[in-house]
Length: 326
Image 1 (cartoon, rainbow, N blue to C red):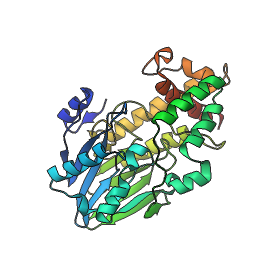
Image 2: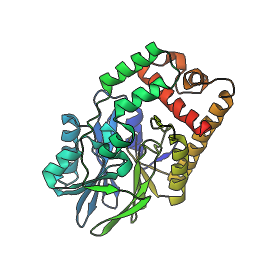
Image 3: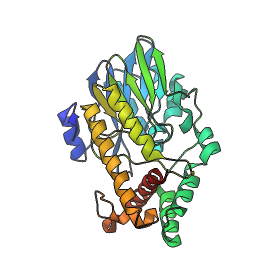
Image 4: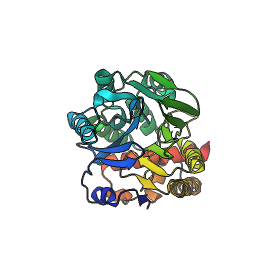
């Protein structure tokens, strides 16, 4: 378990309550926003005060409760949506890109994300989210009725608005983004998605880790519908890259901000490397992700999982198997 920057924030997270906005120093504010209907319960949006205006990292759900909480949280920190000059998106999942358009409409902010997570590029390379999910489920070896059940359940909860257009598209492994007196380095960290990007505040040595590195628990691997996909290999390389950066503070998109980031990155790296090794061992006996998944160690036993958790575990196993066979 990581060391929280604020014990109260971590305590409220563990209690299932939404923490209030908090100042983290160096002009950085964390805004916990509710995720109604999600098992994650909340998402963390961060603001960074610069001499050029406010930089926002991630943009919650496209839902009035998220938007209202963000506006109110900024007001409590003496900020306004109108003052946002850039929205830096870690990745293209709906709980991260949701109200980016609304911020842009309110302030004229530029919206920034990596090309591999740009929706137009993603559709061209690998299809939309549901197309990818359908392809992956069909290749897990699960029975047809299970594939249908899992897909139908996902359609009911997976709200992916894949229409967001970017103002700045990141295309390199690292890019320095300058906002007045503040430089933020965009670092490509694929694994959770193919374009996932962490943002390093060079002055504060604070790393906005998105969903690549949480203070607790494993990282969900990206869907792997294409033959050359290897999100597990991508994630292991990303975690080593984060450890080499050795940030002073990890600003995760869920749970709570934390210290000891490099140590946490290496511990998570070893966890997922062990997963790959275990799948490699099981692959000598079993052929498919569907056959392997029940034999892996999960937070909840396979037989006790609900359909949503079982789907996440199955596609995660599928990605691990891709790493073994890469």
